[in-house]
Length: 432
Ligand SMILES: Cc1ncc(COP(=O)(O)O)c(C=O)c1O
Ligand SMILES: N[C@H](C=O)CCC(=O)O
Image 1 (tube, helix red, strand yellow):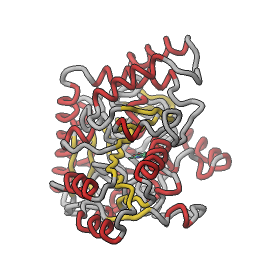
Image 2 (cartoon, helix red, strand yellow; image 1 turned 60 degrees about the vertical axis):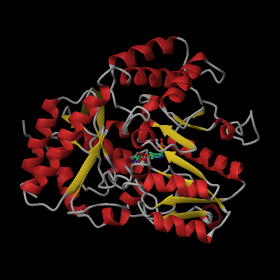
Image 3 (cartoon, helix red, strand yellow; image 1 turned 135 degrees about the vertical axis):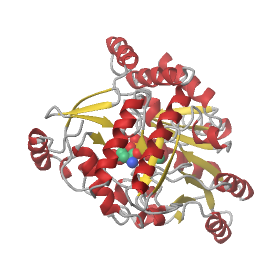
Image 4 (spheres, helix red, strand yellow; image 1 turned 180 degrees about the vertical axis):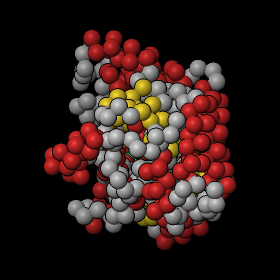
C-alpha cells in the first residue's frame, strides 16, 4: 500500500522544461506547489477518484480538478455525451438548445436564479456580477470578505484567498488603486464589521459578495446567523446580496449553499460543477436584475465561446448524474468519514488540529481552532501542512497543494479509498 519512494523523474523533467516556457511552469499559480514545497507531479490521465502521473504513479485525488469532478473524473456518461456532441462541432457562437436545457436545470435547482447567463469561467462570472450589482443599484462600493476569492479580476484582488493567500502576496501589482478603491473588506463571520461598513458608507454600497462556505482560505463554515444577518443588512440598506457559489454550487447541495442554509441571495455566481470539467461559469438571479444584461438591457457583457456546446453538454450530464437518488447522501457519508477520520488521526497523533466538512467539501487546519476567518486560518501551522501534504503525496494521496484551499470528494470515491487515505494519514502524521 505505502510507497514513500515514488519515482518522479519524468515529472521533474517536464516541470523543469515548463519553467522556461510558462511563468512558474504553470497555467495557474497554486498548482506550482510553492507553499507546500517540493515539485508538482505532472499529470498524464485521470479516471474516477484517481490520477496517474507521467511516471505511472497512481494517486487518490481530493482536488477533483478544483471541484468540477464531483461525479469522478472522466465519467463514462459525460465522456459518451461529449463524443456525440463533438460530432456536431466544437463551438457555435450562436444560440443552441443545449443552453436552454442547462439554463432550465440551473433555474430549477438554485433558489435565487430566475434567469442565467453563461460565461467561460468563475472569474468572468464574478466580474460580470459586480458590474450588474453596480448598474442595478447605481452605487459603486462593494463589500467582500478577507480570504474569499472571486477570481482574478482587478476589483476583487483585495485581501483575496486562494493563490493570493497561498503565495502570501500583497494585493497584486498592476491593479490600479482606482479599481479597488470601491472594494471594502471585512473579516468573514463578522456581522458587526459589515454593519459598521454600511453605517460609514450610507447609500453607497451596491452589495455584499461572499463565498457562503469559504473554500479559498481553507474550509471555513458560516457561523449560525451570519448568512441570515447579511441578508437582513443588505435588505435594510437597499443593497444586493451575492453568493459566489462557483465552488459550493451543486457541491454542498444540489441547490448550493443557499439551499443548504435556506438563505436566498439576489444574485449567484456559478462555475466548476456546471461545466462538468469544461471551462464554464454562469451568473444569475432575480429576473428584474438579470433583465438589465445586454441585449435585454444596457449592461454589457459578452463572450465568443459563451454557452459552448461541449461545456453545456458536460454540465447537463453532470447535473443529471447528481440528480440520481442518493447522490448527495453518498457524498455526505463518505466525506464525513474522511473528514472525521483525518481529524481523529491528527488528534491521536498529538497534533493541534481542527476541521470539518459539508457534503463533498472538507478541510483540516493544524491549529486547535476554531477557524472562523482568514486570520485564524493564517495562524494555523502552514509549514506542518506542507510536510503533511508531501508525506501524503509520496504515499499516493493527492491533496490540494495549499493550506488555503478546501478538499473535494466525488461520487467515485469508495469506502476503501477513504480507509486507505486515513491509514496513510496516520502514518504521515506519526512522522511529522
Ligand atoms: C469561489 C470562487 N469564485 C471564483 C473563482 C474563479 O473561478 P475560475 O478559476 O473558474 O476563474 C473560484 C475558483 O477559482 C472560486 O473558488
Ligand atoms: N482556489 C482556486 C479555485 O477554486 C484554485 C484554482 C486555481 O486558481 O488554479
